[in-house]
Image (tube, rainbow, N blue to C red; front, side, top):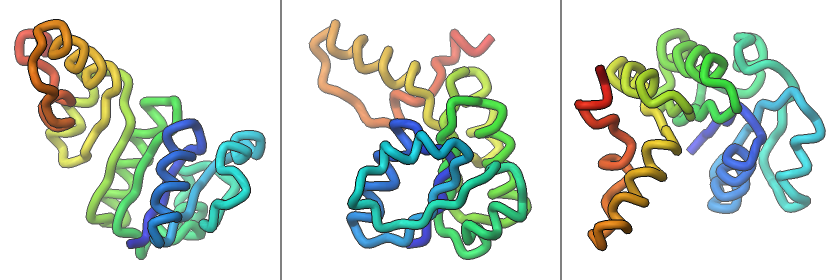
Length: 150
């Protein structure tokens, strides 16, 4: 699988290391060279310095052949814009964006971009633990309850 990841924070670096170790072709886009230390010495993928909203940088990272694009920076706006570019302009089959705002996460999920909202996932897990319920799936946890969507 060919994977392009935008952002080398904790999540981006962990995903890049895991997927590269599993034998996938991983390219990471990151503008801050200090963040690349998170990859460690064994990362076998490629790193492209630059802005993941720049279509030339995305092409250089191989987005035109990507099977998966993951936008994992700290900024919702950057992640959502990059995800839209990947999905609509480059027709990447699987597009994921990390989104902190649960309402925006829901809106973009409805547009076909899979979103990960750690706040929703974490609070749902804690709720299940509080009630001694079995833990659910990520899909269950990553959806804004209807009563909070207004």
